Image (spheres, one colour):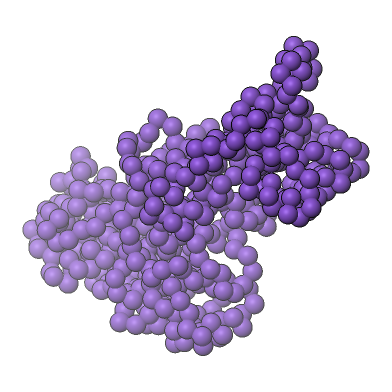
Length: 499
């Protein structure tokens, strides 16, 4: 309203469609209705209002082309020098009434994007205003000098194309979910909306911002409610995303301790407080300044355990009042609540990784195993307890950056070897991290062993059973090594690299 009044005060003639025109007229602002300009009434339940030559010719005519201006004069079409559009609230309609396809379709704006694109195409002569944040800038410049500078017109034009691209991408994304077609379509428009600017990126010399998918399903970092602490950092968001992904894989009360996108501790126990205690103890040195994810409500006992350590962020489905009050005494810890319980849901969206000049896109390919999926390849058969432990270890190793090896005992991590160029180094790191605790553990590897050295390293650690994909040309050599050490080994046939 203030923008329209400001334009009117500058002597600008305002043309508007019915609803907006009535609102402005009701507030004492002189308005010409579009139907009076075009000589045609709004029709088809409002679907056709601005799609008319007297609107689009007035926008698109080049002022520097005499033939264009002569055509306008011949047909008594006035020039339109500014287009101000607030597109139909498609996102809000879907979120509030997403089950009604009729509502969704009726809230696809046709005239608005058409006028925006027309004005943007003729940006040297027509200002295109698409966001309320632009109103004051435009008014101030008009008041100061009577017209808009070309640099301003250019900025408004570029932003307008972003607005229509985002709008169309939202529609394509939503309708693709309703009417799924090709898994990997020929074009893949992305609808991403900025949540906020970040203080910096991975490092202080890098600028960064956080963008969110407005239609993302399930628990995501973008949908959490921050209850306490300073703004999340770039690295916090990465760690929280991975931590949520891991912890939702487990049904029992589970805590994951995350550091630099790798878990450095994980445990499932009868209570969430005990799960945190055991998970943190896996590698307390690495856990300094960690991110923690809990798949249960954070109770007071858990909060008391967390409060004795330096922790960057904690995410849970809820914090009981006493736990929130206790943890909030720490000024810098971030506390986040999810929109729903931390339960894994089937992945429908695609997994994307940006590379220079392009994007890699794949399905999530989440894998679960049961004992029937395992192929025994050694002389010794694993015990029931070892099978249970290997299935737990498999859930963990598929989340660790490759090459990855993990040693687990029961339902807790003991040693984690991540991100090494050779698998034997990952096995060695897991042994060093786990110390004497590795004796009696089971081992999981995210890919096959190319040589027997990884198995020999596991034997030094006292590993009793190994779960791995198999598929190496030296599988028999690896199996022979396991037999020599008296280990049980099973193949899954499934590689779970994570890069």
